[in-house]
Length: 370
Image (cartoon, rainbow, N blue to C red; front, top):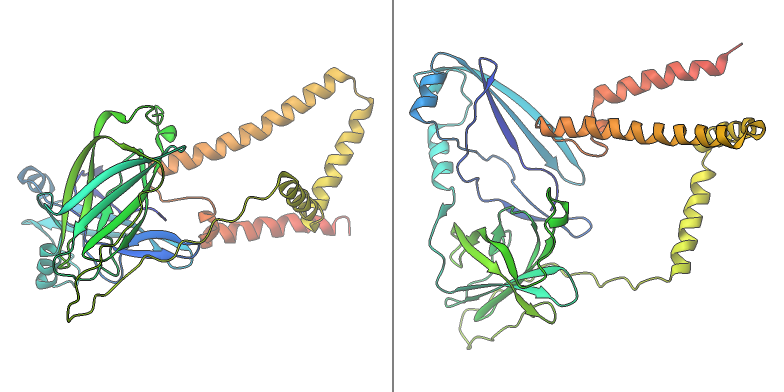
């Protein structure tokens, strides 16, 4: 799945106000280039945050600052940010948006609500043999022979560590059969959670889903899993053909999965790695770096072994320390709520302008001593 979720923060008199949102609006499913899956929204949508009587009292007569951060994605994702301020009086902001009360009520009533687990839905977790990988398989009796939702899953999972949910693959028939691959991300947690050696989790996991029934309505359902079943391979999707009816059945199949590329030999990988190294080192921008390094090595020819080892140790520690500082800066920015990632700084006009000025000043050295 792509990107980061939208984020809203609240400040009153310079202090953070913690508000828990209601369920988010029902998202749409998108397949991006590279066969990547994403969930998101199009056009206008609203998030709702309930206010307790204590919070209303604390905010009365004060300025409330709302900061919203989001990602706008098409071929790439671009971060957006907007700050909204207003005085909170009699339970309302004096600086309101142009959204009508009727629109807000419609959006509020459209939020998915929690419901009992559907009787006709069967969910199971399976393990793929020979891999630390799980599959969520499910079957749903299709009594009215309706089609699958086109822009939504039957089950849209809520984020839940250490599970990384992939695409839903489903086929419609008298019985809808589907499965969803789940990657185990426990090794990336702190502390790390290794994949269970047996078929039982250390503690049950309560998985939460948006469930789209065959009538098109969406609700929130939950199911607790104490462990998983072992199966030789990925659960197969099978279809029980319905009896002939006058209304044709609409069949929607998930986008085809590309066939896996045959594994190349070690020599092939070595050749392409070598070719990539040649291309990299023959690029014009690398020539100055190569010459500087060669001159540095030539200066070391008269040095003793101890001095050379000391020089290279300090050189290596300098590289590691530089990357440590960079990673620390990224970590601090992300923990403060910033939505940043690799290359995001190059999408900032201010940063690009500063880099242009720095490179221009450095290029003036080429005119010396003329």
